[in-house]
Amino acid sequence: MTAPDDLAALRAEIAQLRQATDRLRRELNDLHRFITVEHDDDGNATNICVRCAILTLSRPDAADRFQIFITAGPGDTGPCISMLGSDGKPRILLTLEKDDPCITLRAPGGTDAVLLRADAATGRGLVGALDNGKSRAILQAVEGDAGAVAVVHDDGRPRVCLRSTATDGEIFVSTRDLKTAIKLTTNSQYGGGTLIVHSHSGKPAVILSTLAGYGGAIILNDPEGIPYVTLPDPKTQADAEDDAD
Image (cartoon, rainbow, N blue to C red; front, side, top):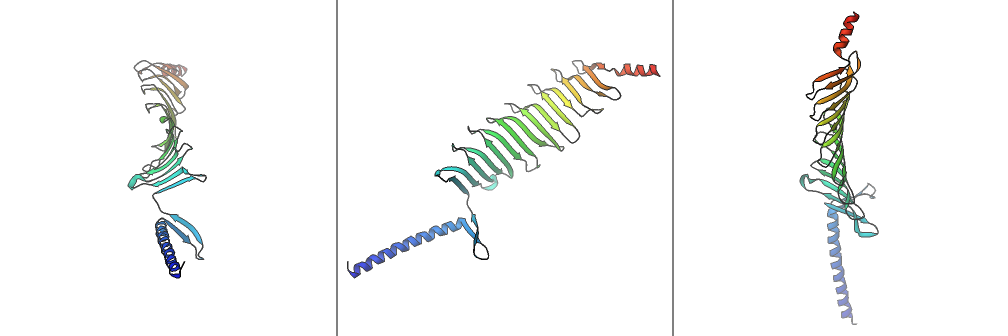
């Protein structure tokens, strides 16, 4: 090969290197839009900041098997972190839509199994247990500095509910048509506890409670909820006290 040929070949290699360098510079500039390396006063790298809308993490031994998606949504959509199971379907979701934080745990079939939420407006939390997407139990902070636990069924309505405050506690058991069947409460007129059994009409039928000065008491009501038997009978007790005087 003559000297002119060598010079031409060298110029061609230089041109290729220049193209490769320009391409590498463009790629680095693109990376700098998303990745920033922070340094300390001695020039040592301390932090790497990544700015992007979607970040995916895959298995180290299988780059095509994604395990985590981190996304930043537009507007009020908010961020979302999705952790995938071995089937590639989301099992854990962390979302923040409209400042409403929520954690969702999903079953293998993709249905919701556990739901954790925090109401941004009230500051109250909620934990829900679901059966393949259908609500079954709810634990929630409610108004009046109270907490409540409800057991629900496919219609989403409670059959058993427990409510507690700093001063009293109550348990409600409902019928299929959502009429109260049994009420157990510490909110009694004379202190102590009260058990109320309701009839099919929803009116109190049997009341077990306490009466001032008499201890325990049983009240039986007619179908209209009007007492017809009271043990002890306040009138009899009053007559006995009059006779004793």
